[in-house]
Image (tube, rainbow, N blue to C red):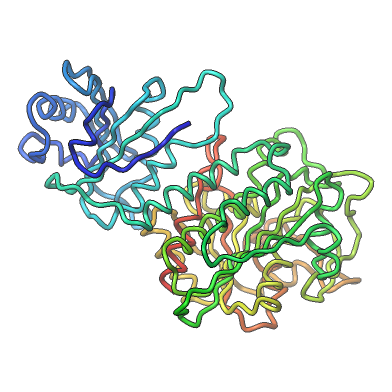
Length: 483
């Protein structure tokens, strides 16, 4: 178990840890610039370590025994500049440098991060949380206490806000859900876990399970999950503050607890890690929790579309035709393009039943997202330029980086042409902007509504180095707060 605590004083930070890790931009640790908060031997050692470190593009780390307390001193320097597509504080470099510091054998660690701008606190706190994932079943793992302090360039303590702390906790919990084995976290258990996380004043929720989905015409969710031992379900949560802004925002998440590919079965090397296919659901769950805890002024709905894409006699089949919640029919030509079926039902329900004016959906939807943007940025597609820009800006400021991909119905709708249904569920030409096409499919089911809509494909950043990251919690919660 790894617990992260925020130090309220500098003295509290240095009380008891075996290892002290200090992080900041390289120029700060020149002897003449070091903040006066560092004194005596620690000051001398920090300056000496800094002389031998060059941050390069991704930061650098060095350590030494201190001969005092804390016993071990580690310095990680980050680059002083970042490109316009990165966060200025280099949160990904912080994650990597914490890993490079080899802190796993300690029982208590103090981390002090020097910030050139107090406004970078959210991204840095989230990065530190990302570096210490919750989930582990290793028999030799020890409990670890991490005490974190943020200080400015003068060495003055920067307080961590309620929003930043809530985001830290919710992001780590989202990562824990993604890391959980699929048999341990099947649809039923994911819904139970979500219920526990949503026990908050003012939050109401209900869950539609199995045949109830059919009654509500949610045939996408139902069909994808009907062959699994644990039936599919949709969890709907609602929160309305006393003095609502008048805006109603729905967060919709794909929560496929394991994806075999269905009858279009994934091959070796492609099915492994598919426990992460509920990363979008974990992100919107965490974001909803943060927004409620921090007093979001908007009315909020959460729609978790939960299923296991399993195989068996009851599995949905290629050539099946499903009529989804929107009333539109879909010919199945790829059972491994299942997430968009869940999202199509989810966004339609959010618009037509819940009457949300703004809908943001998130999903680990396409491998093509990694080809286009890699693991550092999620893809954003929206029917509105303002909403797209807001999400990209919120991503850069929060450290959950995002980049727009085209939303262009006139280019992509034809990819889904079917001679027997309103559309197919997968594209004709796999070389034609697959991520944008997948988003287009989802939008097809609310194009006749007035909803402001954005889609986040977070397949790359949600799961890196075989671990869930909690990506999306900070991005989505910050974007909603700015609406």
